[in-house]
Image (tube, rainbow, N blue to C red; front, side, top):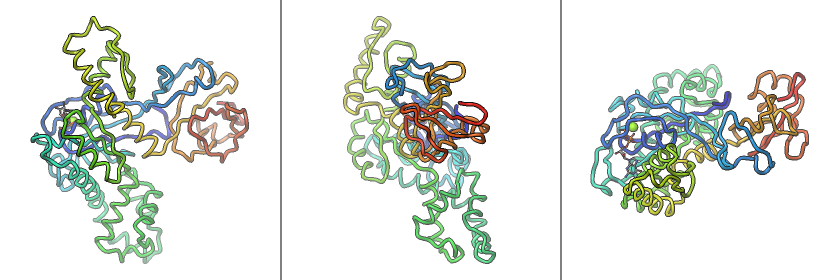
Length: 407
Ligand SMILES: Nc1nc2c(ncn2[C@@H]2O[C@H](COP(=O)(O)OP(=O)(O)OP(=O)(O)O)[C@@H](O)[C@H]2O)c(=O)[nH]1
Ligand SMILES: [Mg+2]
């Protein structure tokens, strides 16, 4: 895992929606899966991959990746994920597994909300007739739970904090940042949330209870961006619900986590040729598959891949990184002619960094010494010099020249 800018994706939702199935499909880590609520109690942590076209074809070189994989021209960059226990209404007050669950997403930078789009599980995750439950309710409830949990953390100290900000003219943002840093909430999140709500940061003591909740809700949206994985698309009741989910203000990704898990496991055993996110697969060892396995694979192809373009699992990870977190991929090299590191490995690393990262910040990320003694960087495409404040772009290949050494 890369240092510095590594991010954590939290897989969340009410019980029994397929969170652990999604997580297993993305990471191939073993996680318990069953059709009843609260199968997961202790969180599962694992490593999934973000997928991006590798630059080696454009540069016409053969690469030798170190921090990532390159399969058929596709770079797979590892990213950390956490799958947590299901959340039920009232969790913020301690219902279900309550705060324990919420505490585990403290450090998550983006949230993947897995919804049972088929409407076959009630609001507490118990099985019901597909179509009976409205998954739109699950979206509203989850937003509320997280907001209320954050509000409860802040509420105790709020009156004092707001008064101090006014009477001692202390900066509200700084005080809130100190108070909320344990939730991965930064000053920039707080100022953006204030701006979005139009509240006066100089007069927080005059905010009403409603203002306070609106503010916390905005902090949640900004600091824990979320997308919706509309899971269980293989069930016929899902389609109409997905159309309705898409009207909400979220990225919505139709998904069949079960299909992805089956494909990934078959690919792991080299029975099929399939990369996460592909729109199809090829059976490579038909003699090792039973008739029913072949039939199951054909069904996945027809009902999921052809219809939706993919199972949705990979797309969700990519969207979380490239859209919600606004990351770009940058390849550091030492030798700009051969695109190699000091061991001669070609295009060894692909780093995920937030858009806006400058050449010098990137140098710091590789090594603090390199950042400190930064002179300039070189763009491997046109061999031009890049100054310290230049913002790096997606798929840039750069070499840092420093007073000490190159990297
Ligand atoms: N039809 C269908 N069922 C699925 C899909 N993904 C998961 N399931 C099933 O949904 C049930 C719950 O799956 P889990 O992955 O354990 O769900 P969870 O959200 O982790 O559940 P908790 O840990 O109890 O909160 C299991 O029976 C899965 O096989 C899917 O894409 N389609
Ligand atoms: Mg689970």
